[in-house]
Image (cartoon, rainbow, N blue to C red; front, top):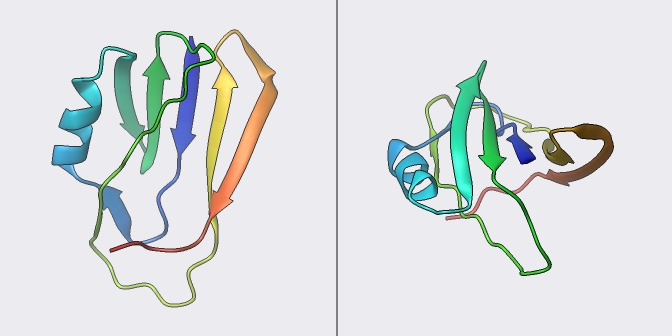
Length: 91
């Protein structure tokens, strides 16, 4: 099992529509949100490319946003952690 751990930028939350679209994908086993951190549990990954699009909604105006992170790791071996940072907000 693979986990995608996503921390939205300050003042943003994942939309319910985005959650629904993710839950309808066969590779997604479950989604949890704890303390504004989104955990997406995937059944497994292979060498086929996967794209996940998350729609965010700004609920609080925050100035000077700092980069946030997306962590991807194996549930059974979290030591092989892959971390990516993002800072921009799309349209």
